[in-house]
Length: 369
Ligand SMILES: *Cc1c(COP(=O)(O)O)cnc(C)c1O
Image (cartoon, rainbow, N blue to C red):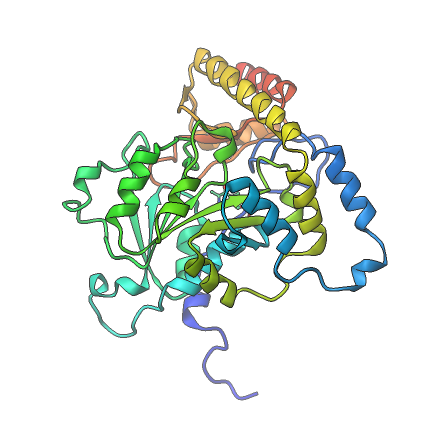
């Protein structure tokens, strides 16, 4: 082959890919780093998946996840046309960028005039959003949350120059990750109203919160709510998520997805999950109880703990740098997450596990202090 220019496009060569939390191969670690649910799926879900493993694996799955979409529609009081299912909500977040956001114009240009190519997101938030913008050759526009992770003041939308009110797409993690902060529907509605592009409300942790914003997706033509079976429904392994929104937005996403984007066992597991919601609601209550106790006990040990509406805590630990805490906890077989990012570098993000895992964490913190 002749040596010519690189086979890899420049934007991919320069891409900083998303870094997922570690999935350790060593046994015996207490895993509080990726916000998985510490409780197993319902026995009914395990049974449904087991019973589905036979010669049917030879066949393609339902291409439109119709059974699952009907059940979700019933649950949320909408039509199946208001729902799209994905291979995890991550797939749908990527699909939304691909479907609704243009590529940045080449050459010199005024980016504020290229709103159709802008992926806007509140920062800090889910660190996948800027990566999705980069992959799509779009323009990133991070808008900073306040220091306490609350939404920027509503009255400042028009004044604050960091907002691009006509950005093609805006991502909001609500409740927020990595801070755990919850937002009121009133504030979210004001935001969705002020923005003329599409707003994706990423509700990955909503089952641990006091409020949910699903109604905003059914009321506003520009709003999509993203949900996942991963975190609250103990189903990370199966990769099932969905979006709810107006029929035209859902139809546009449906045009651009892969034909068999949701695997068959995932569809079966998610349907069985919806048939046993009381089992999960009990687990949410357990996680919330452990979360509130952990907040109290870590505070008593000198940590600053941000109020959380999720299944994790953002914790500013005392005495040592957060990165040193990360290493020292790992020495004691406890995995947590540290983000080398502006505004949260002095904090650890700690998943709320079982009560026994919370006790192990508290003991380790005491020993390190
Ligand atoms: C975990 C997470 C997701 C991805 O969930 P999957 O359905 O497992 O892809 C999306 N958004 C946020 C904020 C998350 O924390």
